[in-house]
Amino acid sequence: SQQGEEDPQALSIQEGENATMNCSYKTSINNLQWYRQNSGRGLVHLILIRSNEREKHSGRLRVTLDTSKKSSSLLITASRAADTASYFCATDGGGGGNKLTFGTGTQLKVEL
Amino acid sequence: DAGVIQSPRHEVTEMGQEVTLRCKPISGHNSLFWYRQTMMRGLELLIYFNNNVPIDDSGMPEDRFSAKMPNASFSTLKIQPSEPRDSAVYFCASNHPGLAGSTDTQYFGPGTRLTVL
Image 1: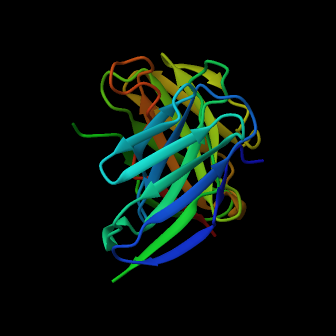
Image 2 (image 1 turned 60 degrees about the vertical axis):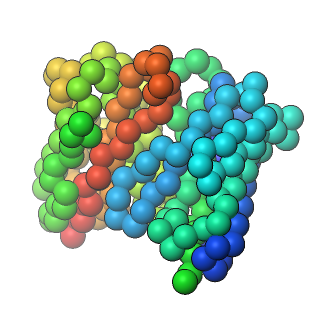
């Protein structure tokens, strides 16, 4: 079963709007990462947030982490058509290993 | 940087045939991962290597699947015999845990789309 579950599964917004995606996970973590996948391509790392961090920013991306609720959110502000992609959260399981478990993903479509 | 290189990009084969997927990780990375992605099951980790040694192969679906990493710059994933349910996109990723600026980040290749008829 997937460690991470993204919500919603699909999201369609207009260019310029903000997009929020949520991720829930089940076990303890050292860090949580978000990746983007464009259609037909490999995953690309966006941002990493450590378990002792609550919020992190990178450009138009804002990630929050609530370890008490075992959840994270990814906010993309002022979305663009080029942001159309699938977004995945990934967790490391907290065991100190180098293994990631990916969630089910959110398909984001940004329309002009 | 060339990034993670995978070949072939597309493979169409018939049931029962042997399939070999290839991966060249980013130079200097000492961990390599093989994933499978399908609509039904999402992205699944099949196996990963540290310093060319298989660490966790619990995701390998069955004995028809095998993976090797003979050196730091090359890995193969082999399916023998292949079955239609093996049809998926197979990704290779690499990283160097602990390297400043890239801790735990994985770098993915473009994937190999496998179709087994």
